[in-house]
Image (cartoon, rainbow over all chains, first blue to last red; front, side, top):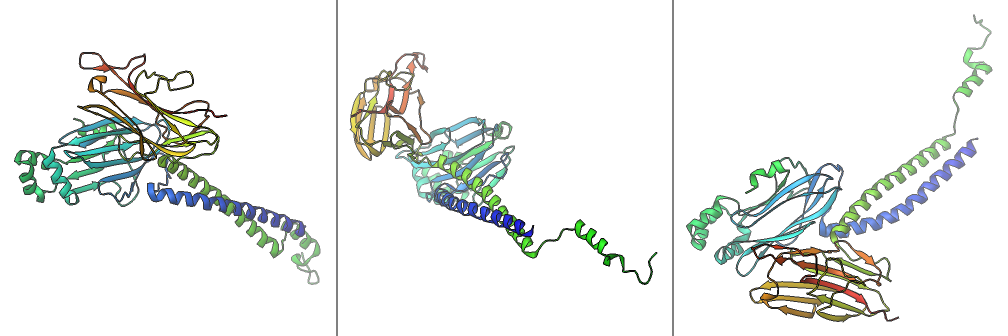
Length: 212
Length: 227
């Protein structure tokens, strides 16, 4: 009896080990593919499928901001983004199935303007701000602006009942004199009064104050 | 009642037999083998969970990365590359060996339906493509000087078309076909990369789409079927 039982246990153990070896091989290939892609597009481990999840992705470009976003199924999200003193884009999105996508803002200094390209799963859009003087000022002072970046240091599971400021850019007060000199007092006051750029997501009620 | 000569109850053979029957005994080796079996199956189950989670993450990353994947080398494969700017249109395409191919650009008579063997607009320009992998890029621009359309293959300009400002009065358009994840299809049908139809100016400052052919931009690859 003991011999038969021992034999069965040896067979069961050997079977599990054989399967495990095969799995380890698959796992190594998957892990290598995951590491290769995650190095460029960030890693996002969704543990709670009902929670909106955001992780910042490094871009090596100070004008380019990117996040991996997990979007739960049937969640309606409104968004408002753009220059508070200029062009803005607003809208709403809902996914019947849970979805992950890359959400990006990329700033471009054209010869005459500062433009921002919005790039997300649904497509994209572009809005521009200001004139040549403001564009030159911002190009020179970009590293000295104040940046408020969502999930800057770690992945966050966030509630969309409150406004989610993905990116807020402000001109700091200490640049007031130089800004005034470059664009004039009236324009400078306008650019300093509110954020230069604001990208806010959330439920309809949450982002209502950001609607024009 | 027990007497001094009777053995204690646990030492009696009939009691011992009953106890053995109630509590089966196993050798130490069986216990060790049982632990080994349980541990190896637990590791197997854990690996299944981890593989499943990793597979979901890799799938999500592959959807985001938009890399060209060719599982059937006898079919077309294409994907719209992840754009770096909102107006960037670059496709990675794979053209199977054994055929010659043409890259076609049409700017007029664009139908609502995608290009097919039965619905093909007259191309404004056509260039030949060799089999293999290529990067196809479309640039379109509208300025006060007019409209310009440029197609690049592997970084080289192969098509340049311009139209005067009067060519189209409306900047509004509808656009279809992005190939946002790698797709494969038979070479029997043309591979449509881009399909945009301009709206028609209604004269009161607004514009609307038409049901008939319209101006627009359509870019596709067709096989010349050498065989």
